[in-house]
Image (cartoon, rainbow over all chains, first blue to last red; front, side):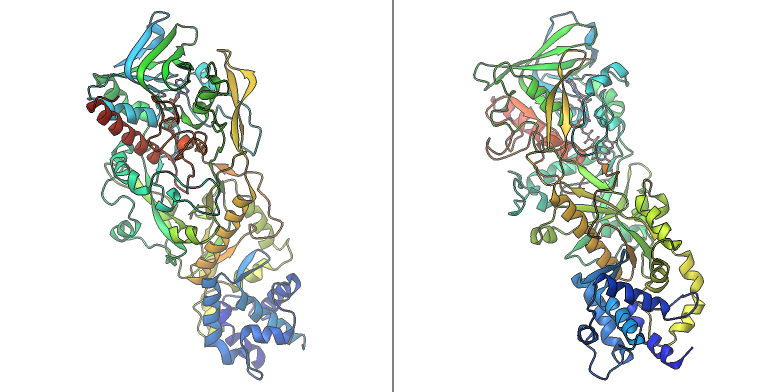
Length: 108
Length: 529
Ligand SMILES: Cc1cc2nc3c(=O)[nH]c(=O)nc-3n(C[C@H](O)[C@H](O)[C@H](O)COP(=O)(O)OP(=O)(O)OC[C@H]3O[C@@H](n4cnc5c(N)ncnc54)[C@H](O)[C@@H]3O)c2cc1C
């Protein structure tokens, strides 16, 4: 696995220990979720807006924000800020993280 | 005493202080509460001790509205009434259910929870239920060593449902009725007509008939209709000799506002997470040795219902494998097998709990893969309150029964509000389950194009058709369950419930019967019966 993927994965705890128990450790799943969330219009499609939604500073990576994202996920659920992706109820932050990863991969 | 009315001579007039029509939980509780008092009580029951097909046929009537059970299957017509096939789930209404909610037209009872509370306590033994803090779920979960969902009490709460054995009132109380010196049960006697004075302000007698048997009449000081929420309006509408719209129906409200509890089974699928409690106490009743038992469910907090424009609801957290009639399972399975857009397996793998630490994700992932595979699915059933709806009715139709009496039709109507309740309830549960790490939730209920499934379960709780109200312009009976404007006609039934919350109705029906018995005894003592 690429170091970059590992770092990304490490950043993904806010998305519920993301990647935990994936049969083949890969970020593909996250990207797929992200793309689906984008396609549904459940999250902003614009990277800048996504960054803002996630509260990411200009040069920061997801892993810099793990603690705050975790808290944001819990806050989302407490406040009912959820979206449905293919029937699954996700927090808006979770969906944004996945979308952000998807866009990153696409070189956005 | 129990008498077969078919053995009486034709034309016999049964004389009593109190004439109770209908020997289900409402009528039997009332009769037993009056047993031992100086009042002479006649309990008129259409059926016998056992089920008979020709009597049951009298319950036939068409369904014209939203999906419903055939009316001759949705209730039973012999001693004990529908308690001969009920499930025995016993619950109390919540304080908020009695309150006026501004957004919910026609909401609000003319009495409060506190007015009923003491009678709830006294109703408990009739259902063979435990009496020690029966609805204190935290106390019992702790005492029995079960965990509960850790919910935000401002939104959702765990509640206790008491599980009656279930008590079949005819079978259980036959001996007590037989032994009573002042209560006489007349079996196989069908009430066909209520007679009143020419001003319809007082009842003078009720005409009775046995199948292929004598015609009789009961004359009493007071009359109480206890035939259930469909048959009570039927008899009132049929009794139209003086008031041509039916007795007590001067304002065209008898038979309106039919409401029941409907249910989506299941409304979601939960992949249980690491923080999920063992759901045993939710899945099936914990049984006590000498009385019934109890189990847990999830309901809205009173404050949520006061804050939001949402009717009441209840989630039964059943293991998915035990959820029959499960449309969503099929859809989910299809998705999990990759026939959808292929996304579900990834989400299933990914969104499993919220407690992962940053370091070592991959390592843990590999170590605990088996864990995930063995995780349980929960398929919460969502029961919900239907708001009072003027156009949801039972009404007479041209078809007749063997006595030539017009049948009653059910035209149950749901509104957009019920769909809003279903969606919001599901959204709240999904958020709370996810927030607490109890699991991840999949549902089709929240999709924009969601419509009522082909099977929406019904509680067979027939409410609202003779609703209780402060005045005659908004209901049929007053706070004492006396028909507005008729001095000696009373009703005990879920038909008097103006709204019905999430709770199954029968304990409340019994509580109202006990309250009525107290009033009758007090009135008799005061010489004002
Ligand atoms: C399948 C099923 C499951 C249920 N489960 C639950 C549950 O778990 N919890 C709960 O709280 N409730 C439950 N209910 C509802 C519960 O059964 C009713 O609330 C309860 O039986 C109502 O009692 P009642 O005495 O008002 O009416 P009924 O039980 O309907 O009794 C009416 C009586 O009147 C008699 N009668 C009818 N017409 C006439 C007439 N013209 N003349 C003389 N007698 C007449 C009938 O023969 C009957 O004995 C369930 C109902 C069904 C059908």
